[in-house]
Image 1 (cartoon, rainbow, N blue to C red):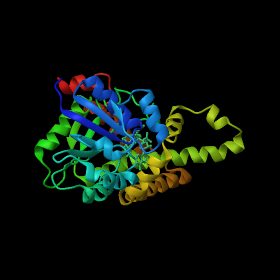
Image 2: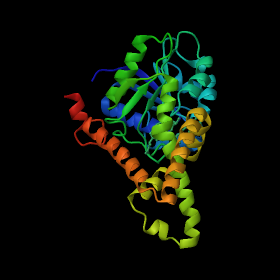
Image 3: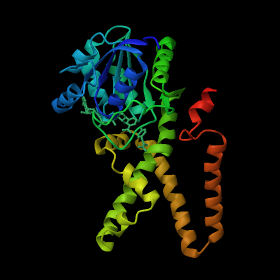
Image 4: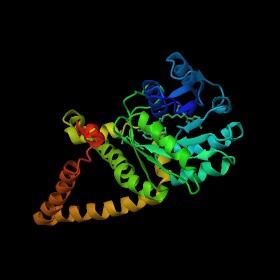
Length: 305
Ligand SMILES: NC(=O)C1=CN([C@@H]2O[C@H](COP(=O)(O)OP(=O)(O)OC[C@H]3O[C@@H](n4cnc5c(N)ncnc54)[C@H](O)[C@@H]3O)[C@@H](O)[C@H]2O)C=CC1
Ligand SMILES: O=C(O)C(=O)Cc1ccc(O)cc1
């Protein structure tokens, strides 16, 4: 494949940045990768494993001369990082991010960016419960969506170039408006994470009573909850504090439905339970029949065909 960006700078060298570095190398679409992380320990690890061509000791040094700068820090840190790099950005460069929340990140980052720099926010819908520079792998984005959030007046060439870049990293791309993104993600990712955190907390309290049986005999559903609840606490604290309205809206609806199911169980309303579970089962089957299950073995091939 030919070069899409001559020089790319990654700010924050955790799971997402390290996966991007591996995927960029695999695709061969970038000339040089520079990187910066706030902690000296993370920078040392990045140097030791050869994650980037250059690991710099300041964010300004990492972004100088870069054609694409990707902010890969927790969403609560995006604004401060944008302020730090702004004076060093090359005119005509694209600044993007990978934050799990879009409206708050746009509001925090955009005011710092100088005229002549293109801001194209993005969010790869791919991750794991692991974090740090050693946790990345080149295949993370394969067949996963990366949502691109163009801004009013965004330069179309800058947007399509970023889309080609994510496609070269293995992702499928789509464009979405920021507030809509935050509501969709509150339903599909943020509220489910909070539910997993809560369920694991409840089980942990219970464990004191049942003496480890909860963990020992966990069935698959609960194991998935424990995996999700092992995700990075800083990252998820920032997600909830920065997607407050949408998350509270979804949690409000969730508790209403939970109470209705709770009542059906208490009063023995089997019809209510059966009808509810029939509806939710149809949703899963619909996803599979529509060919929208990105985990299906032939998903990528079917789409590209
Ligand atoms: N982990 C996941 O599954 C996914 C995460 N995201 C988003 O990607 C971003 C990065 O997440 P991960 O790579 O998972 O996190 P991570 O915890 O693995 O890495 C974060 C990196 O940012 C650095 N950092 C933190 N504050 C900083 C600051 N003020 N200045 C400079 N560096 C700083 C940390 O030292 C670390 O190197 C977050 O905004 C998150 O919402 C998006 C998709 C999936
Ligand atoms: O590990 C999982 O199950 C995830 O849900 C990964 C993930 C976490 C945060 C995102 O913004 C996008 C994807």
